[in-house]
Image (tube, rainbow, N blue to C red):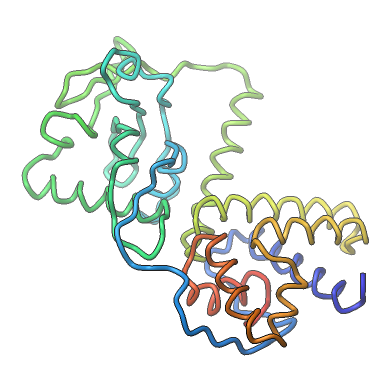
Length: 298
């Protein structure tokens, strides 16, 4: 590995670790390790109607935390744990604690996946924001407990005497979350929630897809372990491994980014590939994501 490339890898990865370790969210300004001026004439994304047909319950909740500016909305029952989901003809339902309204809600995953929103690309934050918009409309129309019949989502009450959540509009029962005395399982659940909370904050701060933010958090933890193991200096093997990770995350290699600094045709191609891969706009990519996360100004 040549010296300039080694310096770029070290600076890039240490910067990412520092940003994610602080759970950044806001970014601390850019640190440039290589610069080039790239002019992009065509947009890599188009404004229009999009959806999130593959979103998971956990991803939806993380996106809610992101758009609400909270961290305590959480899944109480997943779709495979609710009685309503097991009944013939019913959709996939999950139950959440909604910290914005301080109440429990049952939500149809099918409904969330069918929500249409307008943006420049498909992203989970947008579907969560649209859900909140629809919810506000229902509340203003006098439907305070969800949609009229509880077909899409509804507020539920937890009955300690029976151990069930009950829908206020539909009357459906949702089984209580199974209690666990296994300390190791509880610890794993807490770590999982911390991971999603951090990913939601990164997604919101850098306007990237939740999938990208989860990859960033995972990579940040990997770098943390590498730095800890090697007393702050990444080994050659570490650098090679992180180069591969960087390419997986952005869709391009460091060599591609270096080429973009001198090849006009490569410039637009690189921006288009990265923007599509991480799920963001070319403007956000050029002005915020690359400078603040990777210390690269394009």
